[in-house]
View 1 (cartoon, rainbow, N blue to C red):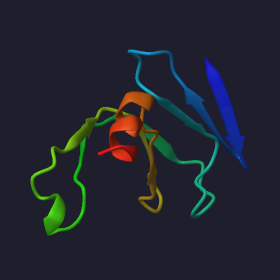
View 2 (view 1 turned 180 degrees about the horizontal axis):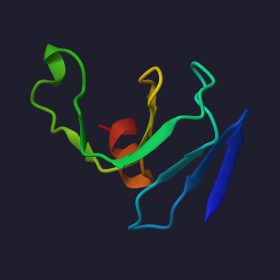
View 3 (view 1 turned 30 degrees about the vertical axis):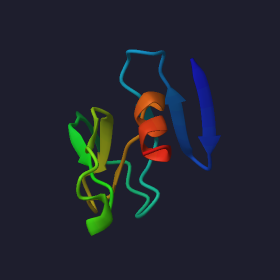
Length: 87
């Protein structure tokens, strides 16, 4: 498992076939430690009418939501990231 850190946010990239995890100690927006972790299903669409025929990219990340201000964070897995980078 590969790990990257930025400020107080620790993002772990899981092995293939696993859900990418986000580990946070506090909210980067408001500083609250009142965080909730949820599983999510997110459909990412390419913007603009020129991309109307492009398929959506489905991601199923762990979502971390600040229960004080509503800010949310998730990590996109490498296969889906490749789809977004090379539509």
